[in-house]
Image 1: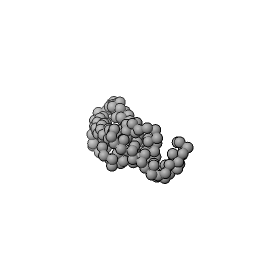
Image 2: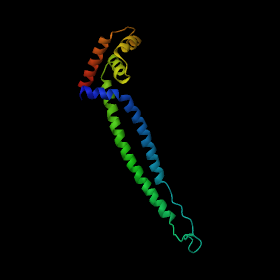
Image 3: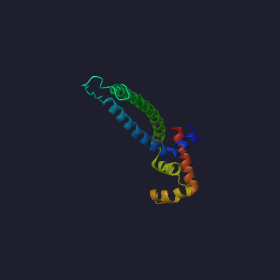
Image 4: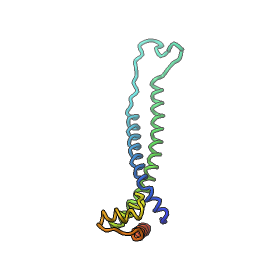
Length: 159
């Protein structure tokens, strides 16, 4: 993994994580819909008279066959939707887990500063004055923060 790829993954981390959660919910709903399609019973009505299926337009309808065909078509659409969603979820999960795994290899300070800069989009100056002060009751100039973040980034690449 190159430095540019890692930085892109870090910058899109929050967005990818949110998309992953949304797609997982959509996938769950699609599976529930598919299960409900499989559970649908076609209801048969008894015909008591001769030619009861013939309507005023002299058209014979077969409601049971139509319902089965519609149900089968719906099942196929849902199966395709589920396959597409599973591919998207797999791709997003790979991206999110790549960042999570690499962040696990960092020390607390490196991790917090890297997250603040790349994921939260804060500036070096802001991190040095506010975040570093909140964490350690000290301040650092932007150059020191930049060095720490660069070291952490290269450390993540080497993992």
